[in-house]
Image (tube, rainbow, N blue to C red; front, top):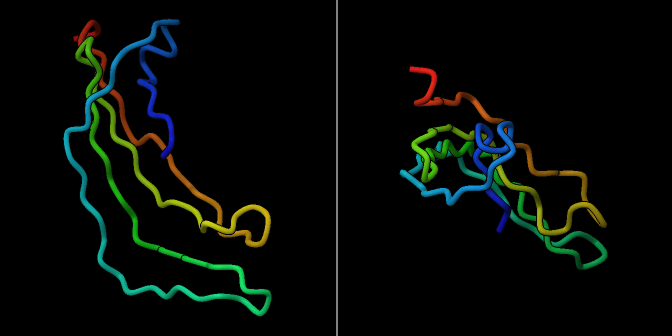
Length: 92
């Protein structure tokens, strides 16, 4: 499990609780396998979009995919996530 931190609060030097407001994911097929050395690989190329809101009312959207369980020791399929947008209610 990864840490989820509100990017607006982080920029303001604050800490906050973050609540999940749901997610959606593409539904492409993918394969898992064990390599010749017995290491398990799980390369899920599906993109997940996650919606969050912190206790101060900031909202943000995170999009990406997780990495292979064998990353980084035996595999280069790394997790890739980006913040798509943020909303700061104090700016409205």
